[in-house]
Image (cartoon, rainbow, N blue to C red; front, side):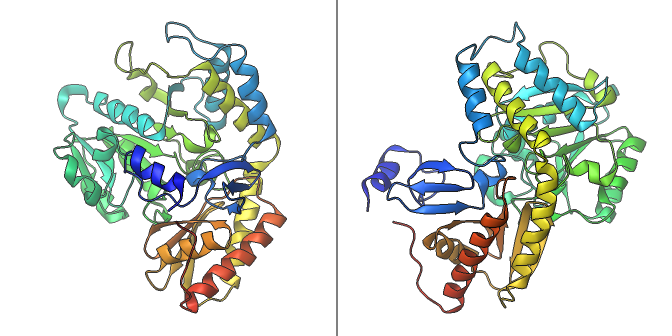
Length: 402
């Protein structure tokens, strides 16, 4: 065992499992381990590193803002905070009535969404929140209550009450959604369940039913937002307007920041004192997010995600491996379906040849590379992924972890 591996086990809380490598620097779509090994990063910090690593726009924003103002209390506002709120309203189409609350993570954004849903209870009759089986909204207590994965909830019962989980079908939605529902919260693509898309027409029907029954439609776009799926936000492809969306991950490009964006009347539910956070909307975080979203917008990276995502999908399908059954997802959030439960082995084989990918479940590989990915990175992925697949198909023992 290496010193860093022993130190991680001795000094860090064991909530993430065994570390795979000690990473010391990054540039573009690559990171380097302490032993000098270069890894092609096709996980992007789990859909976080939208601009890759050490992007000049981020480095400059961090340096400039750190030299001016890092933190003030929320008794004040700052120029980066105001700029980012206006930018998110414009990009989401939230309009004049839209409002933005800043958090520090996706889980925190979903905690705020949970509280927003509870406030949508005029007359005290809307006592239920609907969420989907297989969903993932975070590991804090409220977000965990929304998450449709009993296996990670059991140890923390009792969770906040009032959440009903339903199957991700239009039939189940039509059966469950009535006047007792305060909100429906869904991910447009369930990333942690294996990059699983909602059925065709689901969001449109959800919008119809929630409006009919006075429920909020809240979309968790923590993983799908900020251009990841080839449109700024996944709900825009469905042609609907939600009541709220939650954001994080890609909007900060690696800097911890999240947001709850509300539309229309939902913007009136929170009032002074009903929610808050010490670090909410701090000038450093909002300055970085402005730089990241500005670069995505001005460099055409939303379109790049769409085009490169199609190329990546076709590349994977073109390999012709009997292990690969399908490719799910949109843009640069893709799930590779496997014929056998060997995803963990494939992740280790990929790491051994210098490729970082992820296994959200035993039969799925998740790809979420930086939005800056180009021809060179796709060629390198093709070569390394083929080598990893060949190792699995040949039954070759894998190395790549201590």
